[in-house]
Length: 214
Image: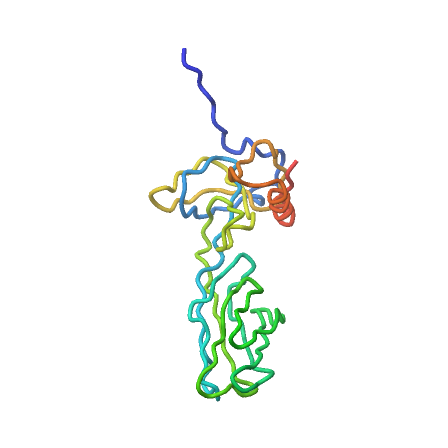
């Protein structure tokens, strides 16, 4: 007789959870044929768009579509000229929470806070107070298989899929464990190329939600 391999049953990975449905949440799976125990990430951010603020003295430009990396936050980044100079200048960069993430130098690529962009000089020099914004779009809020190499938010472990769900052709609603639970680490499914340090970081992210991997 051929050898049969039994797959993971719904919720088999759960060691304990809160009373009622406190630990569970109905989520939308964006894509993939996923199994019970799959670690999930949430799509929390999209593309970025750079633009000059109306009224600038200088007519330089900013990268229209800055590169978004893992550390970017959805929302509006504000850039303000603090050191004007002929054919140059410096802009302070604040993230959507108002945190200073660095100084962008005109004509030099800036890469910090999850964004990469360049402010280019124009025919008219920048003046103090000239400004740009970079808007990082909010993501769909849907869930996908956790991917430590993603940049859309799914690089953060956010939940564990309760039962097998096939969203390979269309979005599917599913139940996920999102808080206050203990789970068996041997029964979880991770990306095939994840490294130990990356897995440990993801396990710590789940612990912040109250989902403890044993």
